[in-house]
Image (cartoon, rainbow over all chains, first blue to last red; front, side, top):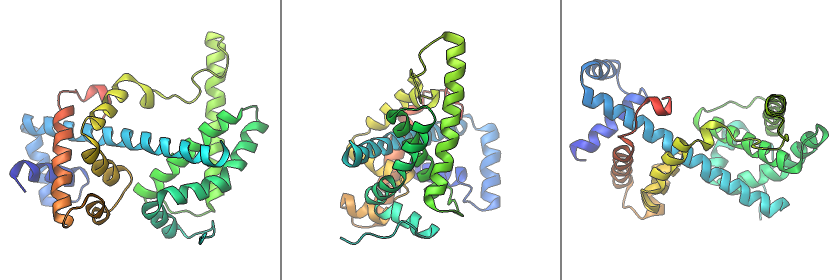
Length: 72
Length: 189
């Protein structure tokens, strides 16, 4: 994967706390001073929130279809 | 058609929801919705109220089972009805507050929470839709519906999991860029 994608992956693993203790700590320290990384982390968390909302909307639509089929 | 019994073990429910979502949800719906309808109607609600409450409860249930690996210690109907009862009590309290404050009829804006209907929320969902069907489906299937990358690779015709993984991160990077101008405060992260 190109470096930008590796970085997205690394931040994902950091958010999910899947890295080793040392790696987690290194990123936490980097996030203290690296404003670009801080911003990327915020944006990535916002992206996860957007996906949760979009997924919930899709599930709601699927349940509406089920309701119409069964009881509509 | 083989219809599995409604009493599955906890692991089976998770597996069934992940591998055959629509049919599994339909089976649960057919079995438990009439109970929710009865409950809500007995306590002053309408059929529409019951539908909203029940669907909300199913969404909570889905997220808990798929993401939080909830361990079910009771039957699925017991669990869903407990959520429905709590949601309906909350709804009644909300309506009572609203009526006393604004003298509005009780059926206005029933279940709309700020999180689901605020303009920021709509904007966030639009960013996901703006990715196009393929990226949207890959990301929502993986991150919300908990689908495995093997399954996503087959569905989208990728040679292997590795290719699907790269594609997933490309899509996520695009979404991250799209939302990067939004501030953290606006979305209470």
